[in-house]
Picture (cartoon, rainbow, N blue to C red):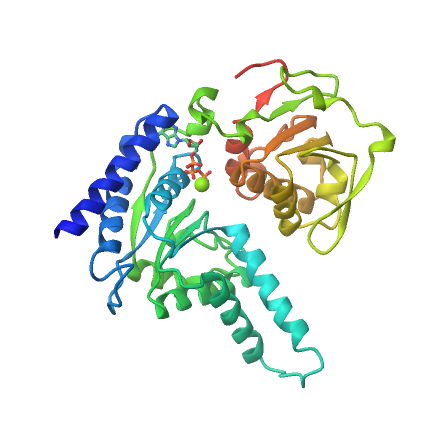
Length: 372
Ligand SMILES: Nc1ncnc2c1ncn2[C@@H]1O[C@H](COP(=O)(O)OP(=O)(O)OP(=O)(O)O)[C@@H](O)[C@H]1O
Ligand SMILES: [Mg+2]
């Protein structure tokens, strides 16, 4: 290891240790291999062939996978924070799709009136350009919570991978699925096989399958995470210390809130808190870009009239899961008021895809009257 590489490797090791200490935990044995590999990658990136060089051979990409709550996102986020460069980009799965859809739609609008190309060529190149715009001049992309569930995902993700390889960008991704388990839907799995082969060939696969879902540990390990200050409450009269703003909204507080290209009826907006009824946010025509827009503007989101998800539409359940994902990733304090959303939804019920993801995130929230 040359001096520069070793120095960066050691700086990243210290950074990991300090980041864990700051949160009051230690890197778990099951995380250690991935942490060590990420530190080596940090060294490789600043080496002569990495971030600042123009070598045809970028450092190998990493695919970190394991069950929910094992500390994968923490590992890659810590790595990302500790990288001494601006030529880096961190994307959550949802950001990626929003940016691509926006880019493709923008391009479609600017081409309105032009002769219709009538083939997939025009659309594919729009996706390419959107990926280009998204990546900018970055040399390392951290893509958190990678998964693919339908044919649209498969196409976009395949393009992303090809562009990354063409541009010699190193990718670090986390997933709940081993590469061969991606795109579990048997209808679409074959569409994704070329990408799976590419991942297996070009990425080092690291398994972070420790015994503990850290989100289910007591509150203190969540440190300063705002999301974990949220709660599941049974009605608006439940009080939580330091949360006076959870009094039921008056009718005259109702207001339209701008989201992604439209507006949604909120029950109230109070400074950086927004309050919605479940049906308006999860049973209407809303989507992830709307939740991202809310997360960008508000630090606290209250969702009232939450029903047991078993009684919702399948789309309502999926929207709720996406909302929880976005709030957790963007660290938005989430208050759910109503029924226990997961009552009656079990693993075997087939009611919710990736149920364990949602359950793990909701486990971080306090319960009415219970100080976790
Ligand atoms: N070694 C550890 N000990 C205790 N808590 C930890 C440890 N590593 C990470 N955590 C904390 O555990 C929580 C879950 O971690 P994280 O979000 O990284 O999990 P994940 O593996 O990405 O889960 P998912 O697959 O559901 O996205 C976070 O609050 C994180 O700070
Ligand atoms: Mg994660």
